[in-house]
Image (cartoon, rainbow over all chains, first blue to last red; front, side, top):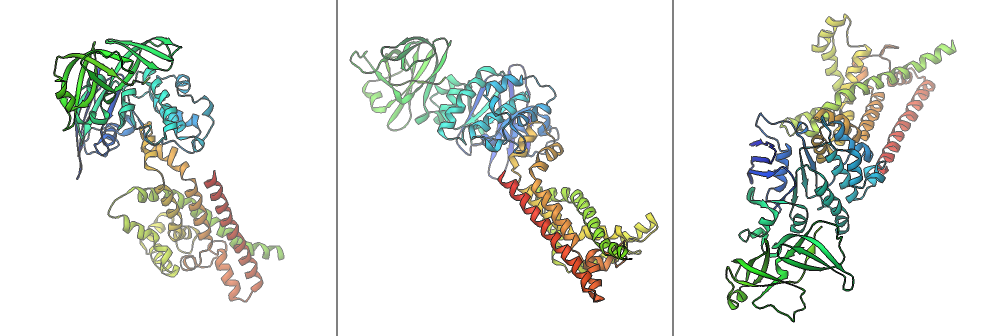
Length: 350
Length: 227
């Protein structure tokens, strides 16, 4: 049995879906923001794709009030791009546009944004996986959907192609106002592309909130362990060409990152993995680590018998530190302590 | 005299070609929805439907022709209705031959179409639907062009198979020149009357034609697959 309802208000999109199968039950009732990218994160088999298919109307239902798939204004980017082999790229991306009652998206802009100008006359058979996925995304956007669903659009690509497609997805995030749900089981992709996060496990949403808040929650086992890490927004301030380091400022101080980054960008997203953060009681002045920040212990969470996750408040941002439980006891780390966080490495996400 | 004789010896060929053409057009029109249903359904009637469609491959044409003769005859279920509608009998007429040929060649149209439809990736259709195409729209805009090989195969096979039919025609159509005297019947006649020359002529024609049609189909299929 399937029931659905989906209402879009100015600020939120309601997702309410239940589906019962012999071996699986999906039961989702959640609201997501009507702008930006919402990550849908969970292990394989957790119901991510099933939820997307319910939203799109691709799961057969018995409820009478469901609109057929083609009347919903919901774009679907499949894991493997599904282009029409008998049409060239231009006719592929115009397929949905021609069937749209109210096209609002500028075709030239989308073609430019996704770098398709040179591909328009080609047939899909001759495209690489990344190119085909860009075409599929353009086709979906041109239909001016009210919601775009992306089902692991990078999963079918090798690392190099992924690297090629990611900057286009960044631009999509920055330039398009349509809300998107981005399915992934890769926390790196999610922390790069998403603003909001839904965690799904066994057909149920077990957590939702802004990306920053969610990544700093210590009670969600899915985000701890190897996935634990925080994301902060920072502004590139200065490039030191002598040492090839870029200095970023954020609410809690400054971070130096190897490499040169565009100083004109108002803010970039930095990801700091929990296992790259260590803690000292006194400020070391003989460490090789460049980034040492004043921090306050916000919460200590014992993750397992050997390790603990510590949430550190730094300015208005948070960092997570993955340390041993032994160190927690030895240094007597507890909530409210003032100490120093050493950040070994920072990834500039975009 | 010679010219007339020449014409009459080619008339069966023309009639056969006509019958095969009409039959394959009708079969594409009727076979497409049937093949689509068979390719998509998980109904418990599917095996039975598939068995019925495939029966003409197994049954001797005489058996098929016998039942058709009864069904299409002036007192048969279809034949009586036809007489009422048109005033003439369906048996021993061209229209009757078309109906009989459609039954006889049905599997040759349905099976290539069904396998083409079955090889359509489901997600490509789902993508078309999410892109605003209704099921019917998606069928014509996506499924049909992606199944071109199936359509070519169905048309060629049902055309060629109809051209070669003998038993069913003999039972239902008889041997009326210009109406039901198709090429295979004419050849049989020539052999019966020991006119081996004329039999050779028509047989050779059919042999060459069958080869060319099948060759053409395989060449087209090959071109399509390496595209």
